[in-house]
Length: 270
Image (cartoon, rainbow, N blue to C red; front, side):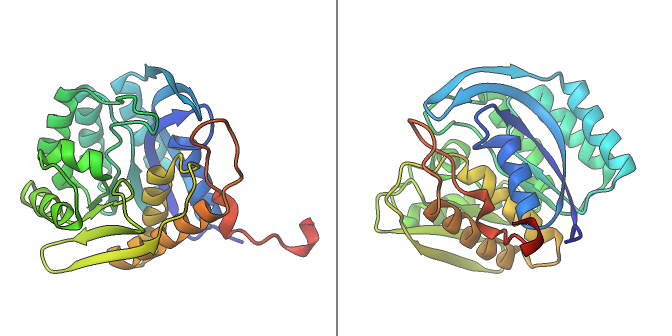
């Protein structure tokens, strides 16, 4: 297989391998594209929770982005954990300089175990400076609540929050519905001309660590290869659902999903 596209990932590292940069690289690779990275933070964590977060300097994050893109120009960019105003500002500056049109933002704010990964000032900076610069934003329900101030208890509430994000300048919004207590998982997609609810079965498992990172990276990969943003969301959701269903049951807490579910090994490597 030859790589179908090139993806630059701007996100934090997860030492347990289930989320963050590690999940992003696995996803992009498993879906047949080439992954580059700009690491924003190093986290010490496992499936039971986050122990600490060590920030990379904003200037070095900017340098990683620009220096990588100068040599190997990405077809699309996925943005994950940006935990300070200074980092968000440097990322915005970098995006303007390298001029990549396809950018997906996963506004990582809270870890699966509940640890907060971004400060309040950074949240406001993200809303004011970054949302309008990206092709798609993919918050889960707690993140959408933080961004909009709307308490979300239903698909109707998700839709209202999505409209508010459009009003803030978002081009496309996908609010993930996994936190609602329902038999189906309903994800709301919205832009100024279309609305769609993706409905899928809910799998009874605690092993969902890294699903948000994985979904945004999968969407970025499909989008980079020429799929429409709507279709990329559809295919990304299907990839994540398969990864959850086939999870390897690692760890004592919220275990990782199976990023390899899309790979078929050629006979000569068996």
